[in-house]
Image 1 (cartoon, rainbow, N blue to C red):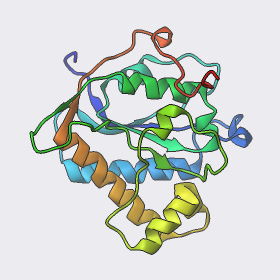
Image 2 (image 1 turned 60 degrees about the vertical axis):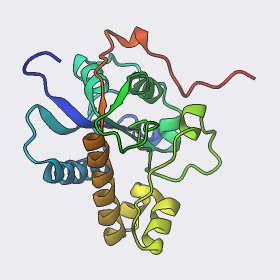
Image 3 (image 1 turned 180 degrees about the vertical axis):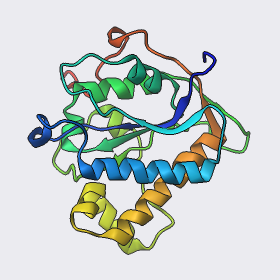
Image 4 (image 1 turned 30 degrees about the horizontal axis):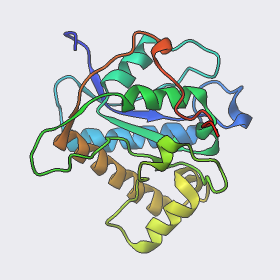
Length: 213
């Protein structure tokens, strides 16, 4: 990695709902979630040199160019956190972000951890029952905020993070974000994802594209 370049520890992949496509910037709920998660991750990792807590694209919508910052973040972050929603599953851009991360090689920092870690932590943002789940999504276990009281786990799985915020389930929301931060940092401390920055979007494919047959 070039001198002076800071790598985000996590990359937050998200897509706006159709009702918000014309809006400028992320929603208030999404910004709060990103800020809360960044604060917790920063608290857990401390002042590590060359590491930013996270990255979230706040500009691009469908049809816009990928910025060098986005390409660099997708190619250098250590944990990929897609916010699963019907909008994300239908997003070409998010499918390419997933591909940018999934093609990178993962090395264990210690011998006592699994050799099958993907460093991809899908988080339920809003319920996706009935939606077509691409193979890339089906193959990876969704994040679950364990250990945690069963009631909170059930609320998160049923409502998603967006639902918890909408229904003002503050205790459940805070608990889920804290457990997610712990999961991100645990992956970071146990694995190293080698950098692979795309030179352009032409290198990437949409992993959410409908499968033939």
